[in-house]
Length: 326
Length: 146
Image (cartoon, rainbow over all chains, first blue to last red; front, top):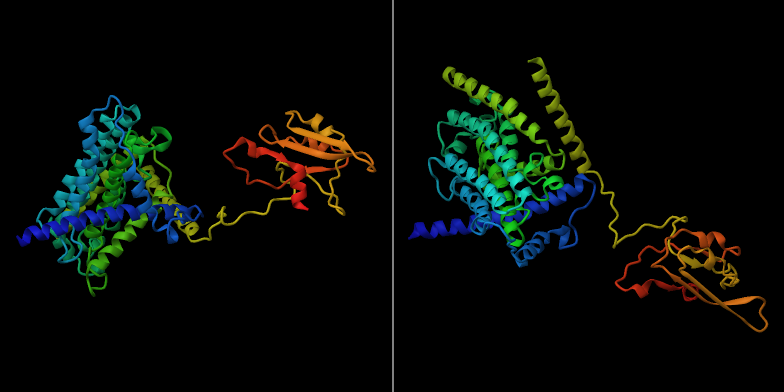
């Protein structure tokens, strides 16, 4: 019984965490965009516009969910849910601190990547079911992008798993007790070190369909991409899923390379360190979005197949050699 | 092969430069004007809708009701009426109506006015849901002003 109560509490907390993050990352995004362009950003609703996400949420929820003529209704309705659920599910194995983890399973890392690939399914279904040419084009782009970026990402993950010898996220974090033992450094065995970190970072940008890799929803050419036909909360779910995925991506980078909830100096480890690192990375996502223009489709695929995949493979081989020697 | 690595390094370098520029801009002061709360002072040569100019001493209109502005207006948006009064030399202006819905701000009226009785105003807060709000009584406007 205790176990059930514990799971329910975790579930509610995780959904609340994901929703809160989605809401306030949008605020950070808009404020960041504003200041990078020397504007203020939202400022009217509440102090510093802090109540803006609530107003946006209320607006989205009160809107009618339109179902256009000719759409594939079951798929059209399922797609937003499919975008949201895997993102929430991935939070289950993320260790926020040593004890604060919903389910400490041995293949947590694998589970997150399994759920992350379901997310692409949602984009494809949403685009396909919409009966809209822009949505279909966007869905195909998103799929080709995700397929090509999942490869270098997984190869980099294999590198880290080889070093740590575990797929349990909490265990991976526990091995990185201080800043010198973070897996971002070459002397831990990760041969290319920071380069593999950058590589993983780039891949998670692409996997979450963020600028400069937001070809899936290139406003100037595809209206809004795969969620063109979605109104109200249908769109809201896609949006929340997207931001939840950003949080998942940043959490993974934190756990795999930056020592998760461990303190850089080995003092007072805990959830605060996890959140500091997480939000620093989230800010970098925003910063990057408002710095770079969107890449072209061939530029995107070239980057993956000509640079990221070869480099990650080289890193894998060199790391294997280094681990053998060490 | 050298080209491959050159492209990789120069690309990465230019990306880093881009990030440096945006983060610098991020911490510079904001340059936009928060419009409803603050507004700009209009420049002297700003061309809003026309208005009657008062005499510097008396504040009365300089208009002599010659009707040149009404004739010069290509859109026919000006209506000028005057009357003869006992003991006053020339005509006295009674009605000066501007239909701003048709006005294209060409300024022909201002140019044609010999006594210099009309000029451009600095009004730009013009928004309404009713057409009638844009038919201005300029005589009343001049009175309100003085």
